[in-house]
Length: 94
Image (cartoon, rainbow, N blue to C red; front, side, top):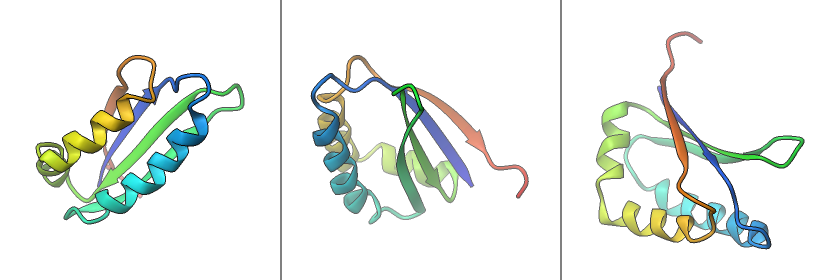
């Protein structure tokens, strides 16, 4: 399993629109081979992280190179202050 966390800062006043975009774009991303899930996490003090799970790094990278992903990502960035800060993980034990 390949996991990505991305720290993000949502623009003030865009939180509800961003949550709607997450739901809509998850429906599109779920069509990609290897997609497991993507969730928006929020800390108690209001910070946000996107959690993405794919079956493999290769399947994630394949999806990440598509025009569909570029379009989805571009719209998501319009709701953010700055670019996401990703961290990549391989699940090594369950």
